[in-house]
Image 1: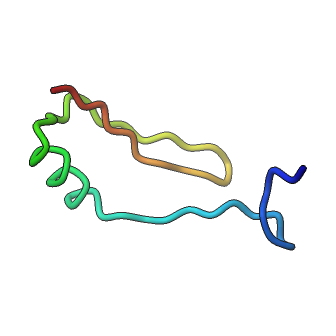
Image 2: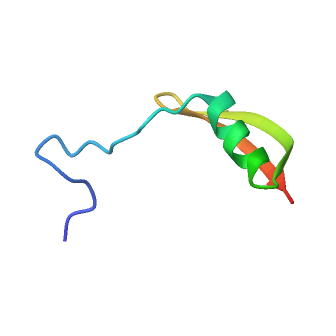
Length: 52
């Protein structure tokens, strides 16, 4: 079993505009409560905590 697809063994990441994600969430009744960034030496991501 292989955890990483493809010959490069790289994971895939797809970037989405944050404003677009927030717009979709709010249109579905969610509200952003907190926002934060996570990072390591080679990886970073944006976290959104949402509630109804």
